[in-house]
Amino acid sequence: MLTRPTLIILPGWGGTKESWQKFIDLARSNYEVVCLELPCFGGEPCPPQVWGVEEYANFVKNKLSGFSPPNTVILGHSFGGQVAACLIGANPHLCAKLILSGAAVYRRQISLKQLIFWPLAKVGGRLFCLPGLRRLSSAARRVLYLAADSPDYSKTSGIEREIFKRITKQDVSGYLPGITVPTLVVWGQKDAYVPLSAGRRIARCIPGARLEVVPGGRHGLHIQKPQELLEIIKSFTP
Image 1: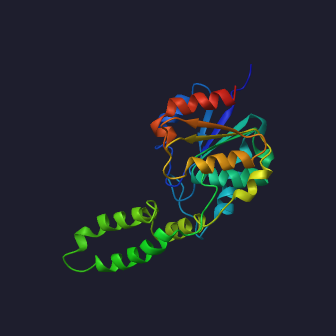
Image 2: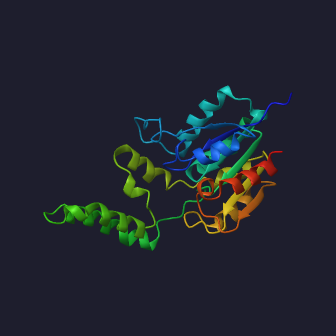
Image 3: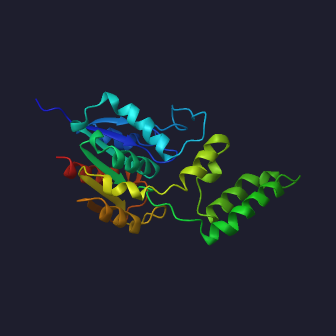
């Protein structure tokens, strides 16, 4: 009797088993599904120190010790894809196949928009502490951080915010040529968080990688188009 492959999901920033549940329920018909929540999210507390991508990769590496690499497929989404690229680029023996979806592999330098809006966001934070303006504080901050192309930043605080600031400066594209396992790069055509152009670059840099574009798809394919995502994955892991 053939053993079903194990599909290990590495969620994006803020992702949890709960946010992936719809896709997990569908995928269980074909795979043994394991969703590894990353520190700071779901059931995993934040680490005591400020971690970067490498520390998250080591965390996942330790979690993978109980799985059989020839039977393991890793699916990394967004930040989870950034971690997966770092991990498998340095340790290609840890899985049989790799899937990167909306992976935040390339981290650009601070844009002009961010250069303008981030200081404004900090000043705005102090301004909205004044009497009479406090009730507008949360909404105002969300608008400012969205304008700065960093909607996740407004949801962070403490060590989580420091980790976020660190990982969003780490470009892991140097690991891509070291990914020697069969790799699927799957992207939403209308991904506004990590553009399709990044997916095309990733596919070019990984030897033999296959690119699949989901028409009309956005960043969270597992939420928006879970059945389409599953069918693409099934065609990659028969």
